[in-house]
Image: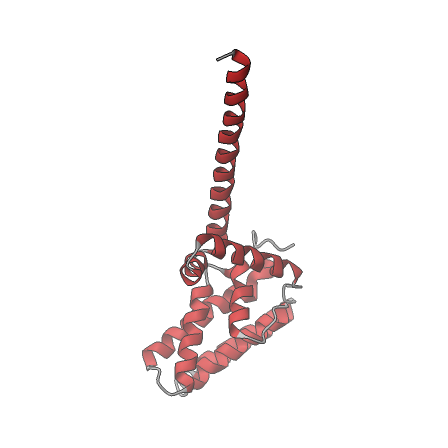
Length: 186
């Protein structure tokens, strides 16, 4: 076999190997970035879709949708008003836990709306929140589930107490998000 023929075979094979290695590297980098950004929501989406590639496409679509939203921080006076309202919701928990959990859900939804998140449908709210709040999204899902049980009078006091804690985690994050160092907001 001549040197020219050998090079005609080796060079395309080497280029192909480099391209495959590059594709694998970029795929793993994207996977790592999505895992870091979405946290447990990444795994939940993979499980729900049954495919890592489909899940990553879905998460990428969420990022694109999120970019089109006008998410904004709260003014200090609005932040203080929401903090007062949260304290009021917590105070009612002792006497009316189911109502307090439902009020917490309504307050979180109102806060999301004021920050610029669409709030028509719970699943879409969760998808939109997952982009910036993927690490606390499981708190929101768990609290919402208990709120639904509570509306049917099937939640225990312990579940309701847990729901308040879960709502509080997301509430605090949404309340302070526009003013946290490293929040990605200017």
